[in-house]
Length: 393
Ligand SMILES: Cc1ncc(COP(=O)(O)O)c(C=O)c1O
Image (cartoon, rainbow, N blue to C red; front, side, top):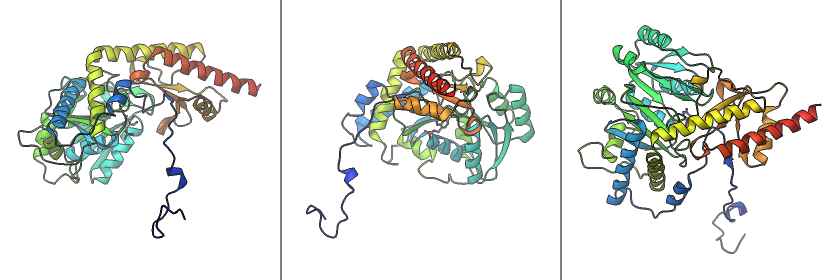
């Protein structure tokens, strides 16, 4: 035993004694995407306390940035400490009471995840099943809402397992006509697909930091409409989590007139990172950010076509600009290609949920919505495919 450690102390494993080593990779998968350089820099800023005036000012900046990002005037707009799933849990836990029904529009894995959560919370799940690679139509959506009269309807705007961007026009009105609240997952779509929360009559949106925003994973952004707040105020049961209680969080984020109370120790550096990412998007302009993602997606489709690859989502208007699913060519071991690219420091991914073994997924989120990075990725994919084909001959 080393002389540095007393006989009663377990020695550390040698692996933890050395310095941290992190390779640099081009993250062209479904997320996290590469960090913005300005975000990386603010992560090194000195820590403040979670109730310090200067930090509270930064939280207020974040709130204003989120209202712009979601295009909403909702007071209850803040960030939850945790990844995208934390946003999902916060939304569902606060909107739903045991015994109530949630209609889940199931276009891929995220509807399944929400259905599982609703079940755990004692809610009832009704499902509108949509074929993978397609979107729900307003007609089928209206019928499902009218038939099951749910308290809450869940829709994923950017279905990252299939690469579909679900159109939402008219969905909020249908929900409100039927006494339901509309909950939208915008984790993979915020900043690359238009989302006008107020104009679309959406009651709750959650998103995350690690895709278009180009900040590290660890914060989920959430916003609740006035209708959602009304329902939450008249709950018969308490929210089954203190950590995710929206009114407790809202107080800490200064969304009420009451003095702020300690709720939890916010991940200070991640809040700096989110503020920086929101500031970058505000300076670029949301419209410009959306356009850049759209143009880069079109560029990617054209480059894939040149090397003989086809998009999995046939209807171009419902493709998710930040994440493209690609049909696997016949007789190609998809995992081998992913590994070949990874050995060159480029990440692309296979399918998820309904698309496992059917697609590759290429992400073009945030700073990776960039033509040079797309060319590099498609070139590497082409070369990898050629070596595999040559071996087959
Ligand atoms: C559409 C969608 N929703 C939710 C999540 C869950 O987010 P997280 O992995 O940050 O918890 C993801 C993650 O990729 C996602 O793409």
